[in-house]
Length: 143
Image: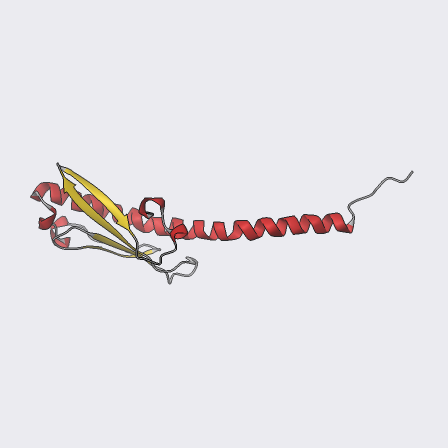
């Protein structure tokens, strides 16, 4: 009686087919994950602006008194975030990602962080433009 030595061609082809299917499913999910984490960096950079707007609104008594100048916030560009702008009179923050940076793989996204001041608390609502691929947007900005 002979003992089998190795795998047959059909067994190897089945393994390659299974790997191909798994890669076809996993690769797009991983690419969306990497773009989402790079977009999340821009929200993390905007956290300092949120703090500046909140402190200024508390100090001045309303969001109508908030301006880019009186918050004391200054933006320093990062690898994946091109701008963070505080709108005068409303405190709305617009954080824009850099879709052109090699390696991001995603389109440019402008996150809008809208504050509301109620009973001494500042609540933030995050939104993105229509047509943005939601799988590439951090969870706090998904509807």
